[in-house]
Image (cartoon, rainbow, N blue to C red; front, side):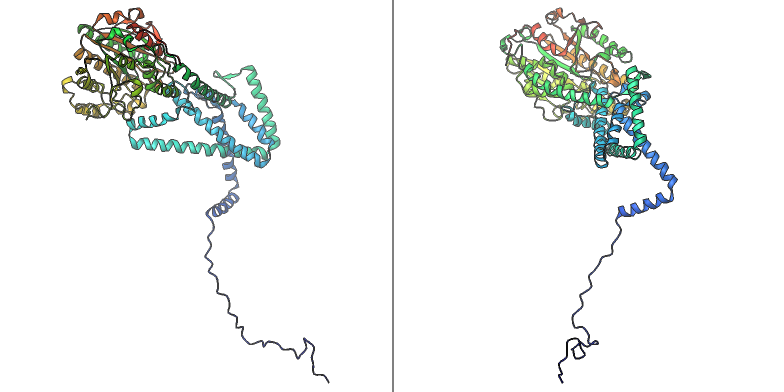
Length: 599
């Protein structure tokens, strides 16, 4: 009998069941305790809260939708000028909303959400531009230029810091940045929310869009208005078109102005043929900050300013000086004083920053450089408002410039103004006017006075000239004056204090002339621009007064055919020239011979 067994039978060898497994067990892995993510917890809590408070959820949802719609409509119909703000402005039907609703209804979900968010961002950008237009129209009398005006924000920040302090300025800047960012986020979210609402109720949204479109067309066709404001609005589309035109015009203007700046009626005139009738004279050109027509004619400011001009005319006449005065239309308004200075000195209409840069980089003859080119005059500038490098000195042709840090002032600042004008004039007398050039030349001086710069608080007061010293005498005057908030928050205060500041500067300048002028002194003083709309109003002219003062009757005889008014106060109907016309008329009046330059 065979003893062989088949596999799987009882004879098969098997591992004993009770023998332990010798293979080591894997070490247990450390598993850190997991915590729910914050947004997951928030989502869970939100779902539970919504389930527990359905009525509150419905009310909150409806409120958010209404606020989103209101925000979008306000942004769509917002004007770019403060004078057009009013309740009726925001009770209009924006065409952009009707068109946008129709597009959102027709789009699939994903493209719809993307387009809605992009439209919200674009609408926020247009809203910011409208707000900038409001500010620029109010302070500079023009809209914001997206090509040229970004550099002005640094000047605005410096002005705020000088007016209200660094801490408050930083807080204001941070607040503005925060509001702008929130505006972009909220408008994007609002547009997405409204587009989702339209998608959920397509039939109702379609009918509502058709009705709104018909109403808009009807209101537009019939010219229906509410309180003088058209009910049918296309404000955002018009604003976008206007911005596009501004950009296009700016780019065209840059190319065209470069050609204009190359042409100069006196560009090739030899020095021997420039201002021969002023040889031997001590000529002083002075700009008075924000000295505009409103100071002479506005019912609030004019009584005090006119009385000062008349009194100072009489005082100068007693000292042997006589004056003639007229009007120039400034190339700027409310600010950007350097545009007024360069327009007067160049004979070119320099109305924006690009034109200014073009001229500063050119060899176009400045009026100051014309005197220097004669070889008979030194040219010196005194500029207490300059607090950093000033490369424009080269174009102006000034041999020496005294800035804010070179006049020895140890007194307090008066808001933006680094020092009172009376102190500046005394320093000009001590450092420049009283010292005769060693080479026997005459002198042409260029002064920019700053005490009448906004915000017109606090304002310096006249002190005895022999007590000016290093300016410390003004400490008590500055402390006793109004804080800058006195005028920044009240237009009536602004007008009154602005008038006082002009009176102060005119008094200081004419007292300097009365005290230190001589038979050869010729003073030309004028405003650089009108004060901003808080003072001059929203429809003020761009005119500024200009006066020529001298003892030598031959000087005023040279400008007799200008038909200017006798004295320091120009008559209302005195001739008005563009500021850019002054250079050539002045050069011609005092014997200069034109030799045009054309490149």
